[in-house]
Every structure is written in structure tokens, then in C-alpha cells.
Image 1 (cartoon, rainbow, N blue to C red):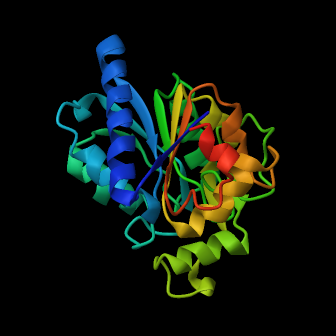
Image 2 (cartoon, rainbow, N blue to C red):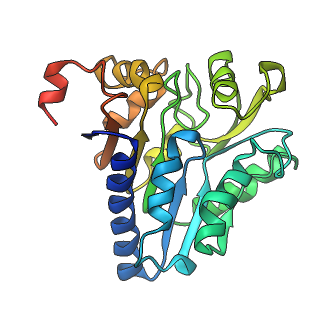
Length: 250
């Protein structure tokens, strides 16, 4: 695992996007297609803006997988992660092959189809974030580190749901769904390369817990430390609580 600390959100987004675009271009050159995942959160705004502006990516040959989605939420809802990806990635690039998780359909069937597609070949680069409670995708603490199922139905804890309210996606806690479909922790770890984009002061405590505390289901994103090709992108605000010893290794 590598840590990179950039001065601010914009420079973080550009640096992470440059690495993601390079990974996609390598896959395209080697195999003719690339398979990626992308996170849906306010923390990804600058990263996705920079990535969709990358000049040399042939997006028509890119296959996109969805990390997570609320159960029972229409794709047209402002907080829908399907809508997020349509607006901020698919619509801007013209990606034609994607596997979105429809929160209104039968979860078992949605999971079956997405699982079949994602297990057909490895993911070249997974672009993820970290929640304020340390969650990875929607795997809230204590996360399931053992299941081999590619996608699972999860219960959302209150901290995770409050984050969604705080980011302005919902008017209040009662409006946030309590369950979601999420890519499993082990499935994320099967990606060839992982980029974790984590800007902002609200993520500082989770960053410290995940990268200086024990590797534990209670700090789900701590598991990223076990991946052989993972880069964590922080800005000065999200890295603010890291110890000098940790920062000296960057």
C-alpha cells in the first residue's frame, strides 16, 4: 500500500485521475478492453472531473462496474448512485458497457447478474473511497471480511446514513434507506490495482483509524493495507491526524 498526500482536493483529483487513466490505457493496450469500478460520493467529484477529461482514453472499450446502491431507491432519485455514475462518468465519456445496480429490482436477481459479469475476468483498476465510519463501498463496520460472494445485501449503520444527509443527498435521516447492495470486501480486493480517493477534513479520523490502527472489520478500509497494488490518495485535510512516523514513509 502506498500513501500519497496532495495539497488540496483538486490536485488530489488530478493525480489520482492520471494514475487511473494510465491503468486503463495499459489494459486497453494489452487486451483491447479495460474493466473498472468507480465510487459514487461527493468525495469523488474532483477525481471524476479530471478522469473524464483524460484525452487519450478510448472509453468505448471500457467496461464499468458499480460498487453499491440503495435498496428501494429509483435510478432517477438525486441520491441514486446509478444517477451519479450516469451524470458524472457514463454520460461524459460515452461508456456503453456498464453494470448498474438497480435498487428497485429484485435484489437477488440484480446480485446474480452483476456477480456473473464481474467474475468473468479481473477488474483492472478499482477506484474507491472511504466513508466517515471507515466503510469500503457500503461495507459498514463490522464489515464481512470472509464472504466470497461478489455482491451482498448489507444493513447501513446510522453513521453511514448520517454522512449521506450531511453531504446533502437526503433531507433527513428518515429519508435514507437502511439497506443496500454492495460489492463485497473480498471482491474489491481481487482488483489488479486499487486507487482510494479520500479528500476532506471529515475523513481524517477514518483515515487515521484505517491506516494506523489494526486491520479490523471495525475499520473496514484497513483491509486495503493487505493489497499488493493499492494507492491511497489524501489531501492535507484528510491526512491531518496521521502521525509524523506515518507521513515520513510517504
